[in-house]
Length: 81
Image (cartoon, rainbow, N blue to C red; front, side, top):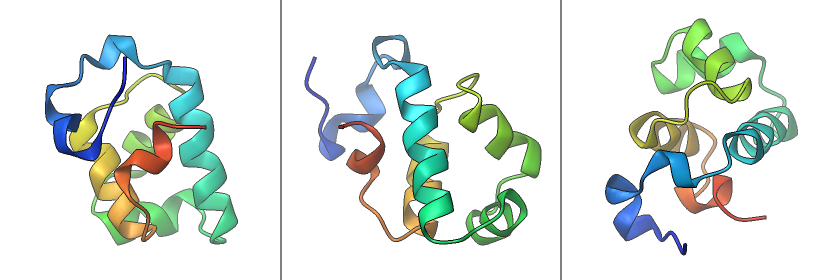
């Protein structure tokens, strides 16, 4: 399944490989030098929400968009290798 930024809201999150998305989010966070706490403050999510995303337990598209914005990346950065 191809996922574009335009249809991120309609994506069946089950179709995404949660572990892949989680690894990309964590790698992006670490690349900019943010701790989980830094990212949480920047994007307005709780530390626990960031940890759930990075553990692959939650890949909510709305949260991924907030994280991408905080890291100054397109949301698609978490969806493609």
